[in-house]
Image (tube, rainbow, N blue to C red; front, side, top):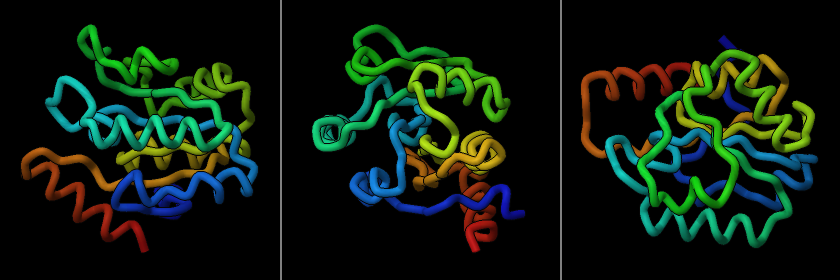
Length: 158
């Protein structure tokens, strides 16, 4: 079960300590898109997420990439235009993460994965030896599947 356990868990992106990541030798970050940066069924990221992202980029010298199993968003999404992105990536397949590390120019021990998926993000990153950060999903409305996933997260976290 430890393969699904993240290095750390946070309830919000704002709780991520960029300075601590730098001290740990992290030079690149793979972000999940849907329900990590973009709420489910939303057209664009919120102003709050965009502000956090802009602040993070300006404060920390880390390369960033979005890796998502979803389709590319509609035109005009600022965040996707700002950093490289791989959509329809095929996570948790190793190829998706290796492609991202190739873009970042990092090795697994220099790379963090930030996402809300235990299988797609945590397992995918952990099995390559990456630092994994579980972020509580940006749910827009409760759903049965979402409730089941949250229960599974609580059980597997500890």
